[in-house]
Image 1 (cartoon, each protein chain N blue to C red):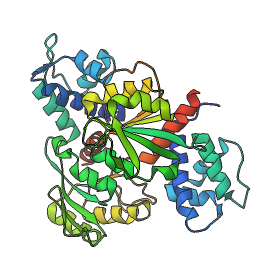
Image 2: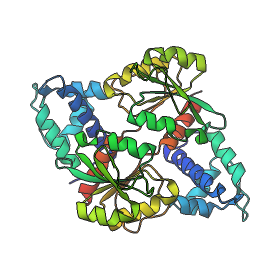
Image 3: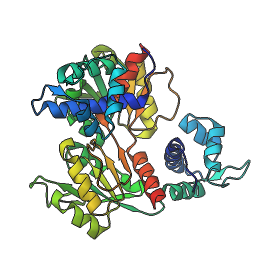
Image 4: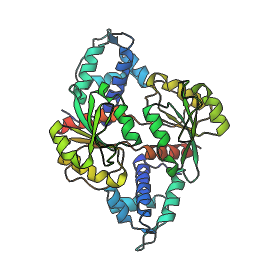
Length: 206
Length: 206
């Protein structure tokens, strides 16, 4: 497949949000201008994004919502369920265990922590194991994605354990401080950093 | 000030993470190569980033940690406390109320929800008001930043209320579907989208 810019891929995820939203109204057909309005972008950009992946709308009629959803999910690789393991059952970690990610095709099937009082318990039906068991549980359960919500000073160790267990990608709330032993895709969600960048943007406006 | 690329600003936030980390060891001097190793980037990139903002290291000696911290915080506009209001006390929202953002200079001083059973309560010492009071409380308490953790279908309304109350910037966990009535900086943290983009990157590797 040819190289697709990340901005396009991100917009595809926004189109999915729009589809989820519109589906609740019972609609079955979606116009590119509805997607455009939802995402506050131009109609032509939506059509360009979608044409990237071949023709799948009918001119003048619009897109079948089901087909569009199926198509976008296929591009994003979420046309099948991806199993996820989450390390760090603190404030953010436990919020994620209750977050409706299942709807998006991501099933958190195991959580990990080092606190003995958490190990053996369940949150939202998801069992909590000890972090030392990450490689074994990742292998046994075929977990593909690791979410890291542990403190920064142990995040690198946890990432290595996930890779040892066969993780294909990592989403981390903590900055991983060293290059990983094996290169897999890593994405970050940095709450403090986003606020700091926002602060910079606010000061710049003044 | 001249235009600074977002990637540079993001690295500044990473340098702050490194400083927080190193400070705990009791060190007072930091070398650019320590920052480089921490962030898995090159020494020369660190030096280039920092020289952007004038000379404040001593060649061969390194940077005074306190001075470096002060300097970066000033650039990011977090050399003074920024007051934050958070809307949506669900799983993610309540996790954020317990998150140590104070350490980073962001004080969440008010939370908002529509659930009557939450209004009037406190989480982590932060009072919860009704969402209809957002404009008033933002004005009264001088809140500069709004964090949005409400469901997507009401996120736009909440953003408008924050702007009405004088918010200068917004960090949103939900996609805002319409252009805002007044243009202020908005940043997004999209958990589902990040997982979807990660999934795309994993499939692409195969």
